[in-house]
Image (cartoon, rainbow, N blue to C red; front, side, top):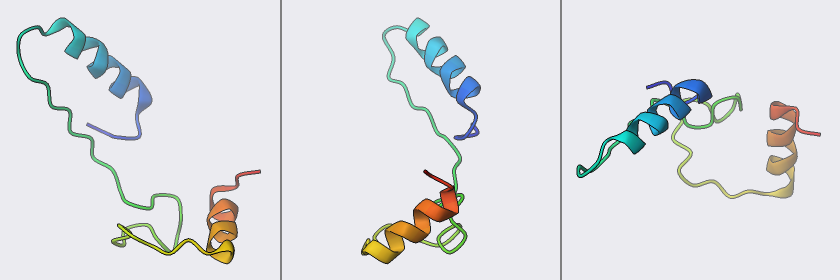
Length: 64
């Protein structure tokens, strides 16, 4: 499932509620660091978040 498609995620969650008596697993395909050019596709499981890096990330995501 596309982990960025909110409608698809909500549809699957609605469906899962109808399945009783069984465990549920939902696998979403995503990209680590998506939308941040210097992190996207890299392996950013851990980064030291400095003030400068925080500002760069906010700028890359155009967060006001």
